Length: 361
Image (cartoon, rainbow, N blue to C red; front, side, top):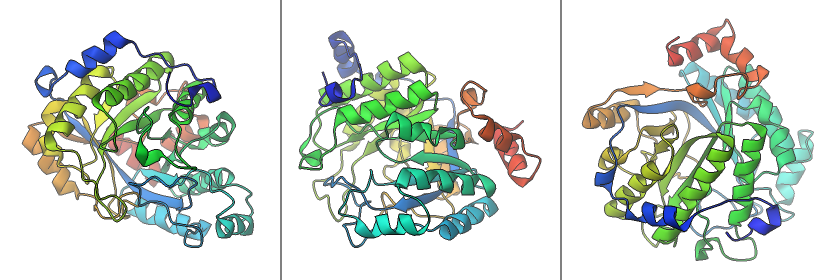
């Protein structure tokens, strides 16, 4: 049983035989993908306040330094993204700001909201009005919090990171694997196309990596909602000085993900955090969301690659590069996509034409 699952009544089954098979996988055991995809987005950090203090994370700001994006800032950023051909508005914020963040709670009240989750819905509605499809990654969410915004999101996500207890997550405000697994399960119960992933190099073992990927697989097999899994290396920054995983580690971790996950679930490596050319033969088929407008606010020391760089990766792999929407094609059905999102996709305006161009309809 993974730490914390008993508190959230989430059932995840990982069999020892599957762990052993995953641990045996090497890069030569998987095949390279026959194409690579990416999404064009804008990155909107609604707030950098976070109740967690993970030792590798530069996203959060301490109390007194964190602030809230205003509705006007959200609208202007979305307009810029739409003008640059983006299709996705990626909303992030640190997990529920606690009582230490007095200024953020005051700013929420000033814009007429009593919680960051309530404000997220308004932000998504602004994005839709400006012609972008929301993809929200707001950390842990209860069923009720996710249900309140599911219909205004094309897809959502949260990084599982690891099912293990690691020192990087320790302390009085540490992350619980059970809570993360519960968030992924909530998305499945609500029928939300979902992105998740593992962090590599934060103190987890190879067994932990195998168990984390198998836990994701178990939840996907139950609900069918996981569209992609990110294999993300930890990177040196102002708070983390313990190094990044080696090339050999990343190649094996990516190959393990590809071997463990069902074929329909994409495997992604963030190209601004790792040279994707080094792992494209290990089963990577997606290069994630990249932005021609905004920074990677989670990893500000690592700039997004230009489209030409993504094309270079695809040329190196000898495969085509295709642009996708934040919702993978197989989820663009009434079962998985809300009427609000389907209406946006079929709109007879500039945004509708942009979405159709990406889908090549």
